[in-house]
Image (cartoon, rainbow, N blue to C red; front, side, top):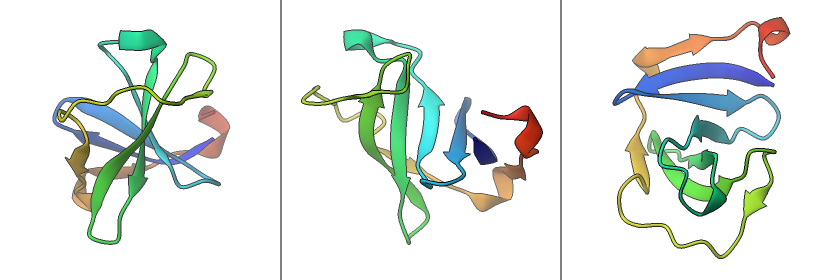
Length: 87
């Protein structure tokens, strides 16, 4: 379930309501990754945490290149999401 959505640089990111982790679809899909998962920092950015497969299971020990390790998060692009329409 998501409670927030933000669009940054042409990509959408959804914040998980209970974990606070931000999820985005992985358009490259290298190494079986379907999602990129980020942690929101106090300084207002998203730091890469893990890749996840199509079932939402984290992929461990996968190399992450420099692109997309840090995403600048701007709360002005944020929108609230209705719980009934998001999973």
